[in-house]
Length: 276
Image (tube, helix red, strand yellow):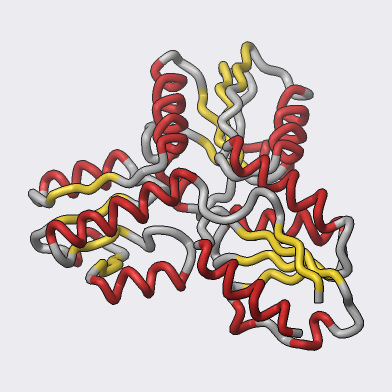
């Protein structure tokens, strides 16, 4: 089995920084807490948990100590609650997510109705929305009825959305009446490069594998994109989910990975695939 790995895949700078901060803090301070999974990858979360990083879903679960703000960020209210409890903070928020939070806040301060194009339940989107008072989240065109078009609109986007989806949403918004609209491109350049690299590779292979957590938004986007061009696309978390039947009769396999997938997961998967 010949295996080709996408030029752009795996950990992005924001994720590498979050993991590095967590490991450094564990070495200097011992065990502490992460407010939600540090990234959407069970292998990484489990590995750090063994070193002492305990994941909690609520600030109420912590009485004292240190808490890590994960790469997706946290809402203004959550940050205030953490400070009110006297907890020490290690802030691993991705710099791009922090930028989007600041842009959303500035737009609202300037009188714009902030519209976030993104997945409602994603922690990054919740953190961005939580940096404002009245931002609206829209996932698809069918949700645009939420917007009052007589207002000034400030449109931004979840960093891991595809340029195509963001463009389609902006186009649909433009077809309604509005007083003024300001669109800020808040897409992550690294995520776009990964999507382009994956789309190019999956056209040239017999079977395509997308590695990453099942709850990872950017990994799911990669898998959906590859599926458009290669029906033999599989979204797997790691080598343990690989089945020989997936490559039966195939000679060339492509591999890409989401921004929260570590290098060692990719390496182990490729080695397992090459044995077949």
